[in-house]
Image (cartoon, rainbow over all chains, first blue to last red):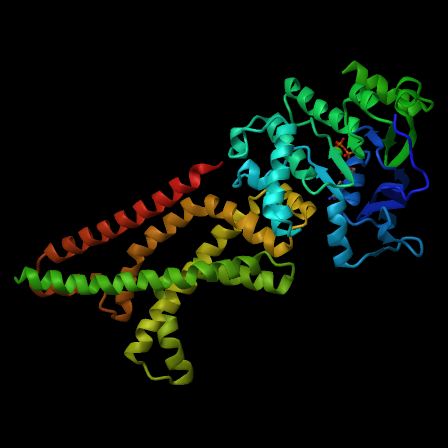
Length: 262
Length: 216
Ligand SMILES: Nc1ncnc2c1ncn2[C@@H]1O[C@H](COP(=O)(O)OP(=O)(O)OP(=O)(O)O)[C@@H](O)[C@H]1O
Ligand SMILES: [Mg+2]
């Protein structure tokens, strides 16, 4: 388990975050800190707002009110109830380099080779040195067990390989935190293992991660902390073993029982 | 009948047809994109205007549109009818009409790109312009190539409609020769030329399609 450095600002800080679509409130007053090196899993029934929470964190969705910060950078804050103030576009642009997101269905760019998928953003967005980026990408591909696949196109790879490329793509700019939204849900059962292994390896290297997953056993093994969400609120959270083996809330127990019966 | 002269004149007509074809594509392909973007705009007025124009342009005969473009300025502004404007009117009429068709093809192509592509691009930090030109457009091009090829082939044949504004394109020439000498041969010869023209166009488009087959 990771030693938390509580003096440092958390990598991710969420305070009283709420999100509504029209009249439907999907997230209610969520507060959450994720510290350097921590692995946090989010579990919960379908429609409980897990994806929406990740999408708010990764700026794919604008929150309705609340505060969001990455390290010292404040992305959004609320002065009063039901208001919010996002940082300048320039700040948002910079903050995007601090996180990576791995999607359920990979979302690789099909017209680009594996290599180009990984190196294009660092070169054309972050303006990093091309040779350095290629070097980093080769190391990452090696780490993902895809050293010989740089010239392939996404359609030539299995789902598991595509997901590993998308993880490499998310890692290329050395993000401070990595978000996963059900990274194995689009995969055949026999391919989920390879992705879970990659995530375990990253956890062993103290990569800070927030993982939305339905793989309860995996969540218990890999995470420092598990969060159970239902109907837009955090019902229960704590050390992985506590939440999954000895939940205190009735709602959590029902959910876990249902998952085991599947 | 002087076949040599006939062929020469048909070829001269063909050069008009080719010129109408090329100018129309030159203007309508980009104009179509502009119309498609208006059609997909957030601004309701722009969107509805584009939608209305597309529906009128696709819902009325091209021949009628050519007449309107050519004679309209004369009736409205008493603008003299010159031969330069005659050709210009054909290019304007064709370009605007084909832009409407291309706009709908582009729109369908753009809307078929999964939302996840935009989201992945956004998370990686690409600007909206970069996303559109580096990530969306190349994928759209691949998707729309078959319907665009259809339109382009139709355009080759549609160039003959320029005869209504008495442009001496190939079909007009063939018709004159044919009626003057009561023979089908000029029409058949023109038919062969149209076919060869289209054959080459189709071959070129197929090459392009094959080239884009490197990914799926
Ligand atoms: N763009 C949207 N517009 C309106 N409602 C939305 C939108 N996105 C999500 N919702 C609603 O928000 C709620 C939470 O959705 P969310 O996708 O966050 O759930 P989830 O916990 O990720 O579920 P799952 O486990 O099925 O992925 C759902 O009721 C959903 O219908
Ligand atoms: Mg989800």
